[in-house]
Length: 606
Image (cartoon, rainbow, N blue to C red):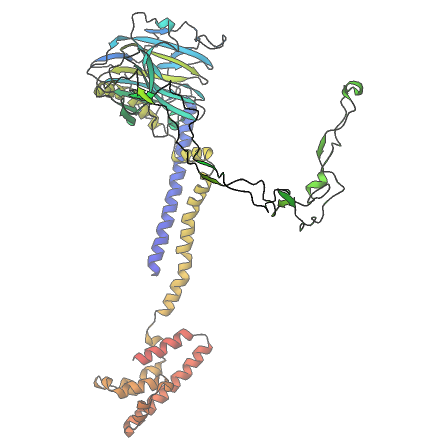
């Protein structure tokens, strides 16, 4: 047992040393990275060399934009005013710039950046051709990076409805759109919008239909300062799918998973129907036959003083609870004639803080056991109860059933109309197409490289743990517990085990360890043959040898009539047994009780 536990302890020590070496190595690597960053502060570089080339779309593409030419060619800034807004902020004067990312940037990769705070921003661009919802799906995809986080603001896009009079310079919040899609946040409400405007074919009005919210936590996409890829897929079978970083976060049906419902109900409440005056909706009424008991006493207070209460010891009856502030001074501009006599403001009496209470003591109030209160008749079932009144149902005059909501209004432009309290929101690599493979190739040539560089520039494990602890201080307790656990196991399984092993070594002995040299030469016992072991007489003599005289039975007393040779042999065994018992008693005096007990059992067994 001893070598086994020594190997375990040795292995645990090796693991601890290896962990320390890894930590030191990570710290050295972090120091090297810091030195490299300081030496190359003019330009951030990744240790992973990534060659970026402006992606080129393929297939049926309606719109594609990378901003890598460094200009806003094809984009139009709004020159109008926002309705229902204060005049000083109603103008769309927020600034846009084309620049590279602050972190994890690629050489030659540029994007559109929202630069102003607390301003309205509006910018838009025409598609190559209008998108018509027919037999092919719609795929909208773009990148967003909240480089400085986000307090309150959005990063969604609008697909502007096609019309002959569409003027992008007049683009504002009420410009007709077909689809709105993208992230939005204010306070602690993190959203991912998918809204489409649906036309009522009966009355011609448009209603906004909101898709159900994703069931995942969206917070990290707003706070991690990484570039994320947002994708919306609308299919001709009237289903939709929303992806973030090419992972589905929400999907559903345009017919069933939108609010308010796409199709109105067939019947509605009659707005002209009125509840009759005699309609009784009371399920219970007071019993008209009930009579107030004669002994019912409505008098008396509901609360009375507790007569068993005693004034607490140390109560300061002569000290008021509030006293004039001794440090207050009369203002210099105080006019007694106009302001009245000046009085210092009242503050809490400091003497009352250490006492049970101050002022006149009064017993606390308790419920009056004799108080019954005003008498009320018991409630019974209302025999005239008619139920809750509801108006009659009539056919919905505006009812319609649209079984193909995918066929939305065509759109011909894409726009960003945003308000933000945080600047430096980064947009890049817009694409609108009909094939998922085209969007995936576009993403792999652009967003995929950004993700690769960001992963390569991730901080070391120690930095990640420290950063997590800064945001969640309770993690420090977990770290300490994790670090102390191996030490505790090491102490528990190694050091105490040595004592146990020593006891096991003391107990692991042979019979010869307890017998003196002369005890090994017991003549009668050693001279017994194999056949003699089967005789009951031998077992009787063994019992005598062990000193178990008290265990003799009546049958054993009858068997004492042996031959003279057996008696001589028995006498020899008894003499030897007396010698061993004497030695056992001497061993007990020295504290070796364990050896004594085991010696007796082994002799009996032999």
